[in-house]
Length: 411
Ligand code: AMP
Ligand code: MG
Image (cartoon, rainbow, N blue to C red):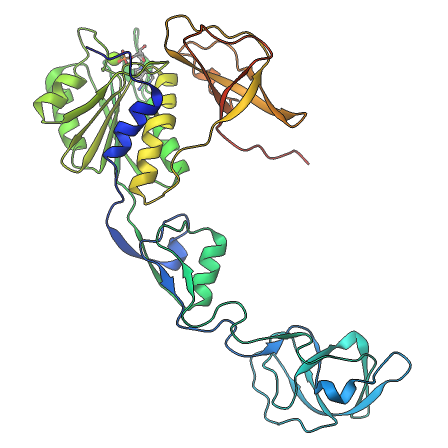
C-alpha cells in the first residue's frame, strides 16, 4: 500500500542514497559552464607570469623620484615605450624612464610606475610630480596564482569566475562530471500532445513539457518519450525504453486506480522499489526505485503534484548525479499572511508569492491550490510547508519556506 507516513526529508534521503556522481568526462572549457569539476586543479603557472604595470604611466626606479612632488618635479630621460604584449629592449639606467601601458612587463631597472596623470612629457624628457615607493602600481608575478597553488577542488561548480581562472591557467579542456541523460514519459489515455487536436474527454499533455523545462533549468537534456496510453503492454514497452537512460521520469498512473499500470510495469521490468508514498499534499503517491544504474521516478499525474515532486525529490537527485555537493535548497522562516489549514496529517505544500518586508519573508497563497490547478505554480516564487499536525498555521505565524526563484527588481 502507499505509505502515508514517510516525511519529505525521509523520502529525499531514500532517493539521494541511490544517487552518486556519474563518471567524469573531458569537456572544452567553453562548454563547461555549470558543470562540476571531477578533479582538483593545481596550477602549473604563475598568474600573472611576470611583473607588470597596473597603470598607464612611466616606469621608474623609485629612488630616483623620492623627492618628486607637485612643486618639485623630477626630470627623467624618456628611453623607451612599452606597449602591452612586448618586452622592453632596454635596461633602464638611473635617471631614465620608459612609457609603459597597463599589463606591459616591467623593464629591467625599474621598480615602480607613476601614473600618466602625475607626469608630463616633453622633448624626450618626463617630469614626475609625485614620489613613488618601490612596488607602486606594479602587479607582481604570481600575485594571483603561484605554481603549485591548489586553485579549485574537485566538486567546484564552474561559474564564470571559475571558468575565467581555469582559462588563465591555459586549460582548454576540463574534467567534469557527466550530466545525466533523462527520459520523460507521460502516461494517460486522456492525453494528447500540444500540436494535436483535442477530442472529447481528452486533455493536453502538459507534464512532459513542464518537466523538460525543469530539467533544462539545471542544464539537463531531456528526451520526451511521448505518451503511454493506459494499457499494460504500451506502458511496459515505453518504460522499458526509458530504462536505457540514466534517469526515467514518468508522470501519472501511480495511484490505486484500475488503469494505473506504472508500478506493475516497474515490477515486471525488475525496478527495485525504494519508496511509494510521501506524507505530503500534493504528491502523495510518488514512486521511486532503481534498475541497475537507472533512477526511476514515478511522479503523480496531477500537474502541480508532478512539479512539486520534481522540485523536492528529482532535482536534488539530478544535481547529485551531476556531481553537485549542494543539492537541497535551504529552508527559511516566513510569516503567512492568511490562515492555512492542513486537514489530514500530511504536510501541505502551498505555492506562494513571497516578498521581503521588515527584514523578514512574508508569503501569501497564489490562489486555489488544487493539485490540478497549474496556475497556482505560475507566479509562485516559493513553497511553504504547513505541518499536518497541529492542523495548519494562523495568519501571522511562522512557517518553513523554500524560495523557488530569486526575483530581480524592475528598473
Ligand atoms: P494520474 O496520476 O494518472 O491519476 O493523473 C492524475 C490527474 O493528472 C488526472 O486528472 C490526469 O488527467 C492528469 N494528468 C496526468 N498526466 C498528465 C499530463 N501529462 N499532463 C497534464 N495532466 C495530466
Ligand atoms: Mg492517469
